Amino acid sequence: MSGGDAAREEILARVRQAGVAAGAAAPEEGAARGERAEPGRGSGGRAPEEVFTERLAELGVGVQHVTGAEDLPRMVASALWARGAARVAVPKGLPAAWLAELDGVRVVRDDPPHAPLAVRELEGADAAVTRCALAVAETGTLVFDGGVGQGPRLLSALPGHHLCVVEAGQVVWDMPAALAALDPLRPTTWVTGTTRSAAVGAAEVRGVHGPDRIDVVLVD
Image 1 (cartoon, rainbow, N blue to C red):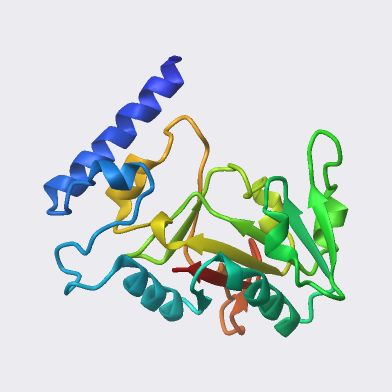
Image 2 (spheres, rainbow, N blue to C red):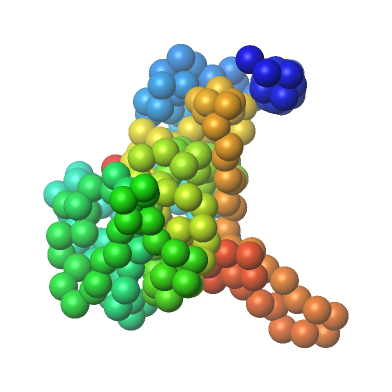
């Protein structure tokens, strides 16, 4: 392990310890493996997916639920049609079955090193469909580490609409649990709603540093 990696791991360890010291429940081994988190302290006995859904709504993120993977292609297609998407960018490793009902929508796949999408192609896409590494219930945060089905950050940041598929087992309760589940050597991006900016006396603008619309399909 290099000096930089060792320093990064030390900082992450301190953050995890701070979360436990502040009263957060220590993450269970199952959560670190990406298994479904159990209702924790302060949750009122609710499932983490329920709290996650509430946080997304507060952040202005659209969320739809499907029960089982068999309903996922229909929901993905519906969410993209609702936004008028005609050209959609998807990362390497995203299951083709998820896109099976996209009639009338052109799918372009980022498949490095064989067929990587250029920046201009990503900017010309109406939407991007990805999965995530995990999600944080307490904050409504989506976390990406560039793994299978996620692609590079530019793929989901440049199109105006990002549709992210989240499986219920990927939802953890809080930041300490998320840090415990992630590989500290992989670069991560944490997305909590869309970015917003406004000059003095000007109207608010969404999506300044990313998509202006984020939707989530939660697979229960």
